[in-house]
Amino acid sequence: MTEQRPVTDTAAQPVLPDAQTVTSVTHYTDRLFSFRVTRPASLRFRSGEFVMIGLMGDPDPRTGRQKPLLRAYSIASPSWDEELEFYSIKVEDGPLTSKLQHIAVGDQIILKPKPVGTLVHDALLPGKRLYFFSTGTGFAPFASLLREPETFENYDEVIVTHTCRDVAELTYGANLIADITSDEMMIELLGEENLAKIRYYPTTTREKSAKMGRITTLIESGELFTDLGVPPLDPATDRAMVCGSLAFNKDIAALLEAAGLHEGANSEPGEFVIEKAFVG
Image 1 (cartoon, helix red, strand yellow):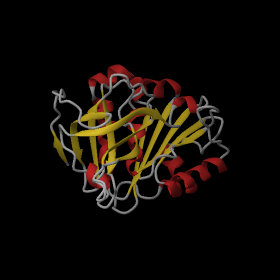
Image 2 (cartoon, one colour):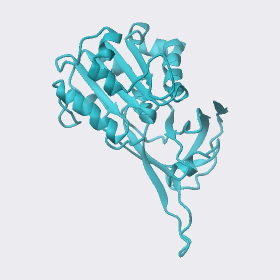
Image 3 (cartoon, rainbow, N blue to C red):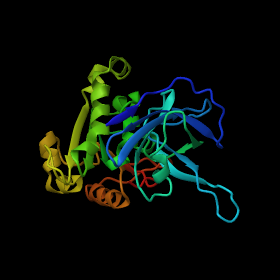
Image 4 (cartoon, rainbow, N blue to C red):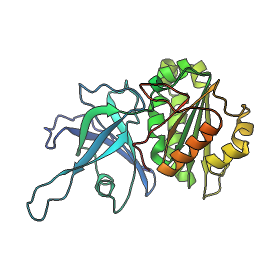
């Protein structure tokens, strides 16, 4: 893992539309990295929401004009953070990530300050147990929600599942949970009794680890619930948020619906919600 030290002087004048300045970059593997940028003073968002971010594309060979390359990215930092954090995959031939993976401290990105999304507490009915189901960089919105006091005020247990191919790909989530539960500021903000509600359940699908298997398989077999010592999914008590690939989201939704849970939205809260804008 390589990390660039954060900078504190971000007074450079923006050169991009809706520009924000990169303050730190951390590379975890050859496929995953996170970065932090300055936060617009006017930006207000709910933990779990996403914004459009990007860079300018290559000049058009005919006109020489550049168009912005924008993609939806979940905000990984909580609503109260002074900066914005993002967690990203690297795709060598990806229109945006092939460029974004090379950003450095002091560079600028485009950030459209219009947050939206379904992975918010307002879209869920009250419950006892909250599940976060994620794969890969789908962990990002949960990194935000795990640092939000409301998450722990609403539930008795917060079960965080994260499934990746290799152990190294779990680093971002594992480090974040370790930091939350040991950092004095976070303990004071969230409360020691609330942090004790977190149940972390990482799994791998390719490299050998302490727990292997797709989370969908572990739900179907009941192994997830046996391991955690909790009853099977029940619409009377359980709530869930889901963020991963389109196929993963579809498979988890089918399992949740089979257990009697209904999908919710900001306008009509339910027992589970899915981030449809995210793919990764």
